[in-house]
Length: 51
Image 1 (cartoon, helix red, strand yellow):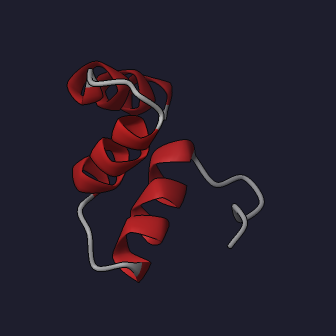
Image 2 (image 1 turned 120 degrees about the horizontal axis):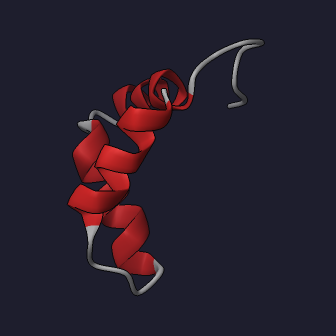
């Protein structure tokens, strides 16, 4: 899956999460946990601010 032309980050993450039946927050939690990071809420807020 690739971002659509002009698509914002949050929209792209929502499409990925929806594909796997997850909420964006759950998707981010899974990704950051695998990367050894724990601050999902800060990452989520940063993405929302940029979108």
